[in-house]
Image (cartoon, rainbow, N blue to C red; front, top):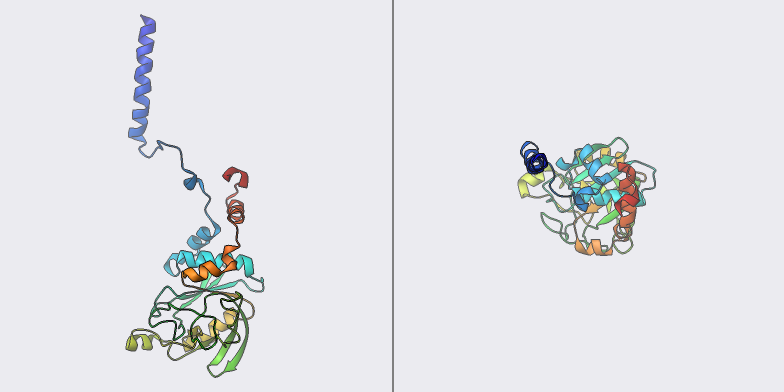
Length: 256
């Protein structure tokens, strides 16, 4: 009789405890955490949140720029500049970031090439006489006084994509057509011959902040560029996982 009592009591407890846990702890996981949920947070995610970049820059643009920064950056300067050509010219689509201080230095409107599109830049070229903007990674070089005033030389780092930038005289300079007043009167910015042109009042401070060896990335979520670039395509997934693990303190073996 006593044995039968304990059997019945055990059965009641077995059925009662899971129900009680679910009632009082509804978020208690009822199934194993998926592999995707166990994946580490990337450096790009961490920095993007830490610097509150969600308000000024698309994550995909920053993530790709950061990959190039680690691969191409000569360590002369900690400045990273990103131009997002998926945005219209009426928006502030150029962002200058101090990676060491984890701080946004500038955010501004910027013009694209006249044959790249009207309000949006949709067509890109590395060819002379195209009057189109080029995509990809550039290294800033020296400054000079030219026909557009204080200007900054850009060296395209990607063969066949933007390596003719210097020969095409694609430089950063100021322009009257890159202004809020132009946007108000025409509904978009004026356009250059391929140069990323800036508002006159910001030209000197931005050029001085990014000159002499900083990295510039022009992003457009462009399939042709993504298929052709070797900068982004040569970064292995295993290398990214190792980078993630170093940040999160996990070992690579635990992820395989």
